[in-house]
Length: 303
Ligand code: G4F
Image (cartoon, rainbow, N blue to C red; front, top):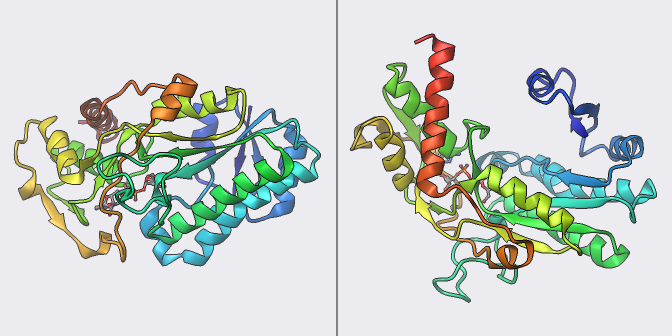
């Protein structure tokens, strides 16, 4: 198994090598087409999972050109690398598409979640770049007959989530508050709703897409939507606090020029055709993330 790692002296290299000693790391950069060709030529992959991207929506507003180059055009570099290396018939490709390609509610199907046929209306440079990647992946599937599947994943959270994303930012802060290491948490808007699921369930869904008899697009989602306020309520309840309001400070720095108010997905197709089912529900997700951060921070802080 191979993984591509970017940049000189990447700080994540050591932890990846420690946690996944069976993964051989090779160097490459999505924005450098020749490095992508070298990577696929050297590894001759049966399955290639492209999860690489600038993936923080707020950051993409501040760095729109870079986001377009990496998250959008970078995908074309991967697809071309596979073709140039003569692997178009051998290598199956998974492209990480996203619910951020949708813009809020599906007004064509009021009350129902987004599915594979819903209209796209991205509301950030990240969403727009991902939509380009989605369509170029579909175009290569249709033009060259390549096995390329796009997983349209709704928010996938868990213990490995970076603290720059709202769920982990909350669970990390809640654990620190419980351990007396922090008093408050600064957040942006609290009313947006997301369809939050457990990343482990979604990775299983990605693998199932690659074992399917034909390439296709699939939505993976929980089919429920919850606000950030609901996430806060459950997370603080895990440490015995009923009212989170005294602990939360709103800071405009974390608000976005355009916000996706509500995301709700409909995973019916993945359930029917792949036999995919999520195993972790919303309260279970919050609970395991808080428990993880409590034990992680206790060990680090030696408390
Ligand atoms: O945690 P978030 O940054 O995730 P977001 O924007 O929904 O995107 C994530 O999920 C997508 C899948 O649907 C992925 F494609 C994408 O790469 C990423 O993994 O923000 C969630 C919500 C937003 O409404 C945001 O405005 O939380 C709100 N929020 C409020 N305060 C905050 C904060 N978000 C962050 N990151 N930090 C805050 O302090």
